[in-house]
Length: 559
Image 1 (cartoon, rainbow, N blue to C red):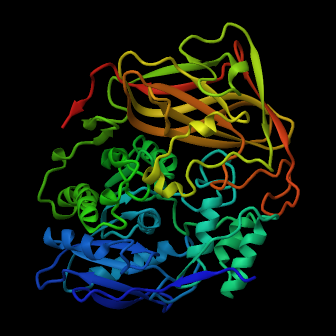
Image 2 (spheres, rainbow, N blue to C red):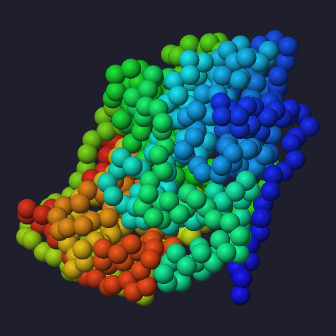
Image 3 (cartoon, one colour):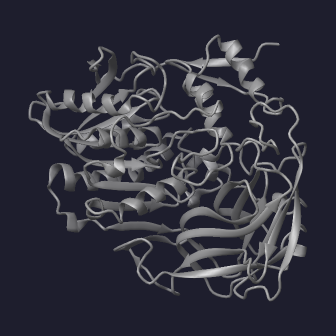
């Protein structure tokens, strides 16, 4: 039976936008909407994206209203090979030159004053970094949201500068749906198929076309993102990093911010706005999301979300594009403390933040249900170990099938923490609030019977009623016994009185990640993945621990 799919084509151009076909240096023309062009020249905010510039999903008709009302021209473009634009459909490979050529076109229009900024999420954050790589002199500021400089969804990492990670199945799945041709395709592959690649072969057969990007990354061939300097090495421009504490790219985005914040030239123009949101702009305070707070389906909810979505960028551009405000009016860091509210600080982590180590102890109890082993401030007095299994026929289920919308459901993860192939370590209940504000890492001493094994780490907030919900997560793919440093990203989050923290450790996370083959075989092509046994060690000389960044009680500046 052929796999059913739906083809999603471009939506109509709004009446108050004027579409142009802008010529690139190789003759390819890119479909480009202009909003708010007037006789008097003005600064331009440019967006370059692959998701149909006119779809409700990216809501740029409504976004443009907010920018044009503030005196900006907004230009929104379908990138090469997508929707109305010409050219080959292969993401990440041509955005440097196309970004430069589009900015050059903008600066020659009568409505342009020669000043350009860029804005947008995810892939259209990556196109901003590509334009930085192009070093066009008219580019004066960017606002990348929930993205990173190295966001290519490859076989084993979403960040080429990170440690090796388990294969990101969601990322490959995205390539198969979005990067086939000009349109996008909706289908549900059978991910229980072996080999896993067969599920997508069935889809490409039904569609009658393939995704070149999918084929490259599944085959282990990385996409070359920049044909200019890496953005870190390019001419600095002011950057407002808009980060979501629950974004599935948050680990990599914060790596960009922290790296640039310590580089000469870049450091002076780095700004951070960090909200308790996920990739699709759902808020912790609304999670789990009700119909009336779901901006994907409710227009009033969309209006409220867009006000929060655009406000930081408008304020930033008023400083660096218009020059109507002084840079001193911008907080260096504006961040939300989850369950509390907004804070400002001069740096990140905030001044006064300190490290807090919580050690994994009593590992023999860890395979049991919550609370399992101990997560405490005192190191284990003696060395101990515990084993847990990886069974490719009984994979640990992902908490949500779509981590781009993690807060939409924000499920109770206790059923997963209670599995006997998941280790869990839990703190006592906190007698006073604990405010997390900065990086979170796990240092784990682990080994395996397999030549390669995966470590999936999650930090959960366990409420007095026993429900356990995600705070941060991270993973690493290991290929030897030893101490593995797992980056769980950054957060601003209050652990409330009576709540506990629980750390879980597993060797699968399906379907978010490709199941490990248990061998050196490419997991996409294996028909018989192998089970394995992992070992975690704790105690003197092999201290497995969780490393938090915390604030003193009642610290931080509120708004």
